[in-house]
Structures are given as C-alpha cells and as structure tokens.
Image (cartoon, rainbow, N blue to C red):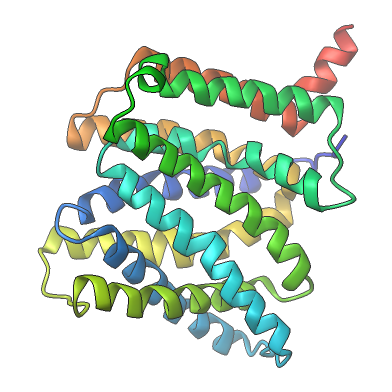
Length: 303
C-alpha cells in the first residue's frame, strides 16, 4: 500500500485550488467551443501554454535536454497527453454536459492503474487495485446509462470519445516513465506542450484555416483561462502539490474537479445531469478512494 504524506493546511489549500482551476477549465473550453472548433481550441491551449512554460524554464535557467530520444519523447508525450485527450474531450463536450465530461475525466486514474500494470513491472495489479478499478468501471458504466448502450447515437459516441481520451492519458503516464524520467518537471511540461503544438498548430491551420484572435471577448477570455491558467499555471501548481502532498494524496484532486465543473455548468449554462450521472460518480469516487489506499486500510482494520 502506498504510504501517504501528512497533509499540511497549505497543501490542502493548494490541492483545492488546483481542483478548482481544473474544474473551471471544462466550462471555459465549452464557452470557447461556441465560436471555434475543437481542433483550434486545442491549438490555442497548447500553443500559449507552451510559450509561458518556456518562459518559466528560461527564468529558472534550467538546462535543456540534448538527447534526441528525449525530444522524441516530447513529441509522443504531446500526442498522448495533449493532442488526443484534449481533442477528443473538446469534441465530446459539443454533445454532452460539462459536468458529465468532468466525471468521465475522473476515470483517468482507473485506466492508469490498468495500463501501468500491463507495461510497468513495478506496478502490478493487487487485490486493492482490482477492487478499485472494478468499482470505477461500474461507475463509468452507470454514468453512461443503459439507454446509451441500447440506443447508440451521437451522445453515446461523445461519451466514448471522452473515455478514450482518459485512456490516452493513461498511456501517456507510461510513456513518460520510459522517455522523460529524470527531467525537471518544468522542462518536461514545456517540451510536451512543444510536441503537441507542433502537431496541432499545422493541423488546425490546414483543417480550420489560419488561427485568429479576432474573436468575441468571451471566447478570448475562455482561451486565456484554459491555456494560461488551467494548463500552464496548473502544470506548475500540480508539480508543487506533488512535492508537498505526494502522489497518493494528489489523487484526491480528481474528486474535487467534478463538483466544481458540475456547479459551474449548472449556473452558467443551465445544465442538469441525470441521477445516474451522480450515482456513477459516487461509485467512481469510491473506486478512487480504494485506489488511494485509505478506505482499503480502514476496511482491513474493521475486518
């Protein structure tokens, strides 16, 4: 079982801030999608965040990697951790609610455990992990709803696209272990965003036309939020929280994101989720809690 670091008040505050920032990103993306396409929204997100993070690297005077293998790693990481999940989730948000997207996004940790067990020798599947993953899968299936399995439509496809995005995140974590181990996190994040921008910028230009900033103020504000704050700023905050709270505690951020996204979606866009979405999130949260280790330890003590 993963040992948990003791959480200080500051660590809790920073973790709640990170969950709130990421929770708000779902609404910001949906607002931008009222005017721009999913592909262009991803190009904005990775491009502007890339510039900010390279600025941070320059200010910190961090050494740049010279090994070509690392730069290949950046390109693969950008594809798996940005291009595929950002693109699939942005497209999916055109057809389902903001809050529901955030619930499916919480399944990232579930798929991460499975993929890590398949490809990493030190991440074997234990009984605790198997129970947590199983509950997580039941939660995802419940959130989708049986009707969407019986009557396959664009909404069903959108939900599956978002789940495929979470699976891509899981493969990205394994890719990072192989190609980016030992790098300063700021350099790794900037390099990853460079790799994704090298893919999304020309692709969006070809498919959607030249990238423009001649957009409505609401769209520009949304892009600024999800690119500069919820991507560049959140990456920096993420690594800070990871250092003070540990990876075990950081999983709790996953549970903070959906309530923020659901609330904002309801207030700003009038979204209402079905009861099965909330039931699915409850099961998914229980599965994540077991993966976290604390609930499992409590059950073992009770037994």
